Image 1 (tube, rainbow, N blue to C red):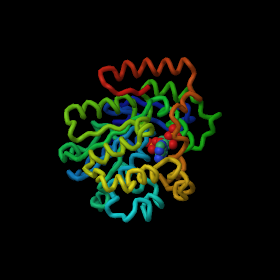
Image 2: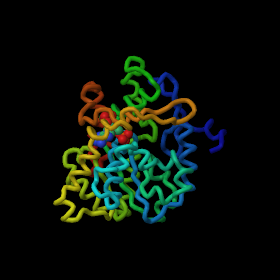
Image 3: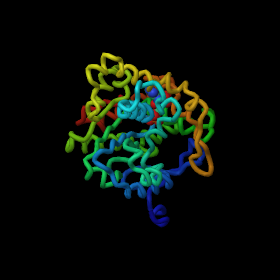
Image 4: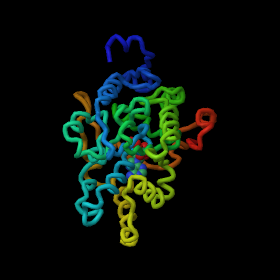
Length: 312
Ligand code: A3P
């Protein structure tokens, strides 16, 4: 995107991040200049009908969804789900890379990456994705836990303590729609509307449903991906093995996820442990005032009316 264009876009410098991050609103969605650039470049990706695209708003459970999908799709190649599985030694985000963050690597060897992740809003997806009819899984999560997860993840990424990063400020920004890839509700609504037109290529998973009933949800996901579990596999405990392998406690205790890190850009490295914080439903209760709860409930009631999606 032309440098000049940024001067014309709505701009917001995040005070709760002590001004380290500036977001621009482009075609309805906020993001840093770096990520807007990456979104533009991602347009050149040529999707294949066999691709599986895992789409998420940040902090809604991409790490878990990637691990589960990878384990489901690769299981035929493994004698046992849990032995020698790449997930035991590799961060799920490296097994299933983000399209916009690893474009060159993916384009150089597309067959190595049949499953891709993305945070891109639906309207920012490469046109080839829709034309290819590839499968799209969209995961979403209760907005209050997303705000809390986003707060801690971003805060830790830029090494700010809780005292130095006021939660009230991220709450205000987020509920005004100003967050990376936000507004969160528009991210969901775009995918939801698209799924109404093409129900055959979309599958929605809710983080809390997956937590409450992993068996049914993992089986439904596998069915949608056309990697259904056979009766023999179910009897042999393959579904349960996959759920266990990808569980929060299993993944977060692996050496690669406890101590690994990777360079994001010339300025900072991202520690893998940041992707595994608490995974608690309702952690928001420790952060929200009654007023915040009321504000966000009213907001999502308004925004999500007309859909069966519940974000509260
Ligand atoms: P919390 O910050 O609430 O703990 P994403 O993967 O989209 O970045 O989302 C991160 C959130 O998912 C974090 O939530 C993280 O702890 C949680 N998470 C990571 N791995 C998980 C797993 N295997 N099962 C359930 N939740 C997981």
